[in-house]
Amino acid sequence: MSMQEPGLDRHEWESEFESLEPELRDSPAEALPDLADLVERMLDERGFDIGDPVARENDEPEVVREYLNAREVADRRERGDDVDPGDVAAAITGLRALYDHLLVERSAP
Image (tube, rainbow, N blue to C red; front, side, top):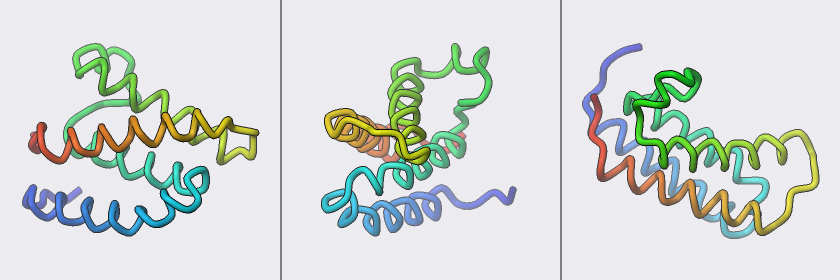
């Protein structure tokens, strides 16, 4: 993986998020997995180790929990399971909050 200037990541994330906005508004359930993927990449770039339960203990637990809850809803949606619109809305709200948090609060390691 090549190291980039943090500003480049931020610009790419903002562009990708903006491109998801119309779909999040019009077809939230369909857009949820894409938003979850974006936030997952952001977490990875910011040094979170989502796949390692031990490392997760050292990360910000509320950030990890919010992501994992949303990812679970997104994965159910991708499998074609029935997903409650309220769960989709909560997952998108949580991912938006994480997106904002990662964009502003946590700079690249």
